[in-house]
Amino acid sequence: MLLLVPRVTATIGYATAVALLLVFAAGIVRAVRAGRRVTCRCFGATGGDLTTAHAARNVALALLALAGLAANVAGGSVDAAAAVVAAGVGLLVALVAIRLDDLLYLFGRPANGRP
Image 1 (cartoon, helix red, strand yellow):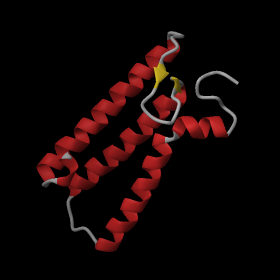
Image 2 (cartoon, one colour):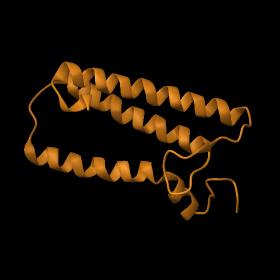
Image 3 (cartoon, helix red, strand yellow):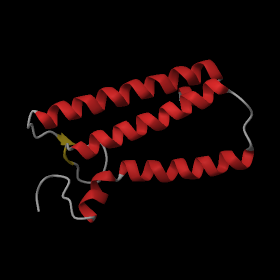
């Protein structure tokens, strides 16, 4: 919601997203390294145990948010055609992020550690 309003508020929104995603990634890495089986039911139809793939997803999303923050700080005008293309690419990336567990299972790596 913060990203839809003027530049200062959008900057706060991007910075908050980057910070939260990195904190979540660090928590996932910590749980995986400790050998804890923690089920993630945030994305996907079934959920599964947290893996380094979940941490990588959060880091990738944090990098995208960081790019958004940099673009927001740089300013400039927005071309309507570029905005439509960016929205389409954003929807595709969101779909992949949301269905990561299902995609990992589909390509042979069970997300919940079971065959």
